[in-house]
Amino acid sequence: MRILITNDDGISAPGLAVLEEIANDLAGANGEVWVVAPAFEQSGVGHCISYTRPMMISKMAERRYAAEGSPADCVLAGLHDVMKDAPPDLVLSGVNRGNNAAENALYSGTVGGAMEAALQGLPAVALSQYYGPAVNGLDDPFEASRQHGLATLRTLLEKGVWTKDDYGIFYNINFPPVAAADVKGIRATRQGFRRDMGFGVQPHVAPSGRRFLWVTGAPQQQPTSPGSDADMNLKGYISVTPMRADLTAHDALEALRAIE
Picture 1: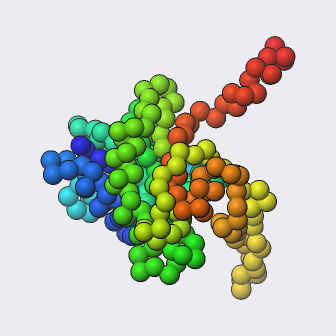
Picture 2: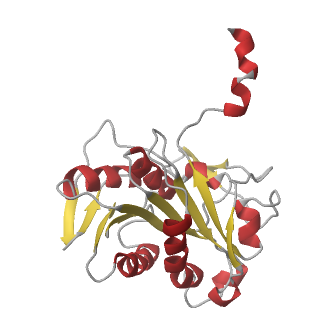
């Protein structure tokens, strides 16, 4: 198996090293793992692409490249430049430092990388490690993803739904904020929503007198809707959420026929 991996925390991120371990085991002795990752952190860029400017790409080592762009840019670079003569069988994005469950998935560069791969017609999975008090005290905060990532991906590749339609399914995996030994299993989940927990801004005046705004997040440990990805994560389960890039609100479409 040939696997392309990327992330949004950058080429030197510890989570990318975890994903490299997982991908090498998944690819097998006769497989190949290629890395095309952002040269600098790209958290929160979503599915952004560098449409109005070029990006520099540098070969760091054999099958390892850094690109000055977003995760989606890196996937494009991997498919249409680095691996253009022999495309990958699978694209993996992560392992992100922090969860990409619930509304976080909409902002996530990690998910954006997997989404771009799916739009390019390839099987793709985003992987993220939920942080929390039980994880913060571990020597390895990626312990749950490191020890359960390979089995989770193998199960998903064997039993998951993989489509070849225009907006093919890709997957968003979040590992719970617990030690590896405390992971209770895998759950197929919908994307959740944390109410009253959206992003905001905090003003700051610099010594120069210029006014800046820092984007602020929200606590990630509050309960969410039962059965959702974040809810299952906080209960100790690995969440696996099938996603599509199709943004149509299909449930409202029939009612909207009244305007015709």
